Structures are given as structure tokens and as C-alpha cells.
Image (tube, rainbow, N blue to C red):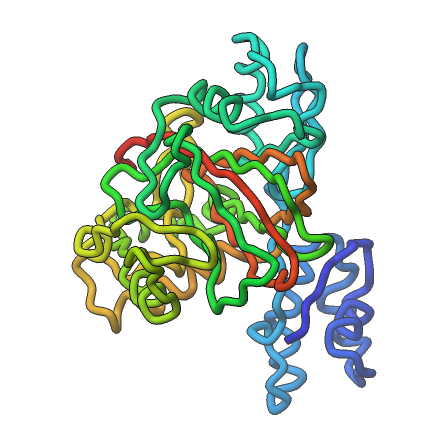
Length: 371
């Protein structure tokens, strides 16, 4: 598949077409006479749509074969704050927050700026937080709201809201916790709103996490498509995850199911697989912005549609929502603490660090029923 990134400058129509199809054209003069100088990406798209099929009817090289990435609507610039410094991480989303020690009690003014940055950038992270302990993480998380009840994992004995997410160096497994594009536990009636993940032991390479901005993905859909999606409700179910866990993990001596080295609760598999129906386009309760609410890990149907009808719709939206243009990737270090908003982005972990220990600790914030 061919991917084009337009570092745009004005070109004649012939020059633009030649860059697209990679060959001389005998109709140079007529094309330039018809289209003149191409002055914008939208004119280039029109040219590609109208002229390539006309000039190369049997080549199969049409716009559908050009994996063009979205342009426009990208504004991940940082606001000016009094108490924190924010450095944008990527064009689509994400930011590093500097000048904060999360092992200390934060003032209301500092926390208000952190929360504002999270709502703007969808994911924020802090580095150099090695002094942050389990109690500090619980205290920081609770500033966002009431603790969420994780559907999968056990908390620590002395810190019940802190869930260990560990893969030992000796462990080899076909699945790890958090793999695949998803938003956390959307099969619940009121899924978690915010997640906090702290890195303690990090592989020398591998173990990165990807996020994708589902607000930006929604904004890049046509108005007609947005209107079509407005009344639809997506069925979120953990059926595929439960089946995968049962097939790939061996119960330990106490009969507990494990994913990698993460010990699971006694899973309520019936309610998890029954799942919930949520708006396919949800509105953020703070920003008021709309975002796609789906993910191939859990989204399995559309209310009122057959599988034959809903499958192509969900497949397109899942591809669209996870375009590389909408993503950012975080390289963890020991002492990195990451916070993300499940209501406006997806995330994806990787099982690519066999032979190296990865020790993380997660906390979640209780969410609202999506609207």
C-alpha cells in the first residue's frame, strides 16, 4: 500500500500527477490547460480523483489505492499555565507535564492545570517520578474522582485500588494485559473515565504503548457520516477477551486465571460477555466534544443491526479511528507516570518484550454512563 505525505508546495497539474503516478504523461499540455497550478491539498485530491482513473483506466491505480492520511484539524499546542509546563508529544495528542513531583501533595491550583491539560491533550505523562509510591498513586488518582472498580485485576493487599500489571522476564505468553486497541472495560454500564499507569521496571526496548485520538477521528468524518452515526448504539462485550483468556492461560494452584503474570479476579463472565450498549458517538462531559466510542477488542455489533450490516461499519470506523495520523506512541522509562482519558482515546499495549521484566501499576477513576 502506498502512503503519501504532502509537504505541500505549488505545482503544475502535470507535476502533481507525475508525482502521484510516477510516469511521463503524453497529455501534459491538456492537463495543465484544464487544471493549471495546483495551489492546495484539496485541489490535489480533486486532480487525483478525476484524472488518474481517466488517464489510467486499466492500471487499477485509483484514489482507493492511495492511503492518504488526513490533514487539517490538528492542534495539539500547549496552553500557557502558571504552575506547570506542558510540552506537546505529537501532532494528534499527548503531552509531557514538567515541574511536578507526584510524590508530594498537589495544590488545588496545580491539579486544576493538570486536569485541564489532560482534557486538552487526552493523554499526559510525567517523567522522573521514581519517588512516587503506591500510596502516592492512590492519592493522586483520587483527586480525579472516586476510584473505579476494575473488572479484571486484583488490587494489592495494602493498596486495594492499585492493580499490578507485571510480566516477568521468564514469561512467554500469546497475550498480555492491555493488548489490542481498546478503551478500558466498555462492557460495563459506567466504564472507567480516567486511568493512571506508573512504570517501575521497564524493558530496555519494547513495551511501548500507543494511543489514538477518537475525538480527532470523529472530527475527520464527513458531516453526512457524522449524522448517520448519531443515533447508533454499539454493543460492547468482553466475549472475545474472555474466550482468549480461557484458551491461552493455565489456572494456577488456586484455580485463578492469569493473563501473562497478572492475576485475575473471579471473573463475572456472564455480565462481561452480555456487555452494554453505548452511544457509538459519545459526548465528553467536561469538554462537550464528541468522540467515536468503539475499539476492535470489545465492539461487536450495532443495536438493531444484523452482524452482516454492522460488521463493515465497525471495521471501517476501527480502521479510521486508529490511523497513524491520530496516534502517539510513548516510550516508557522507570518513573514515568501516564494519565489518559478513556472517553476520548483508545490505547494499545504490545507483547514484544520477552526476556525483560515489565512492572507497572494501574489505578482507575469511576466513570459515568456514556451519553
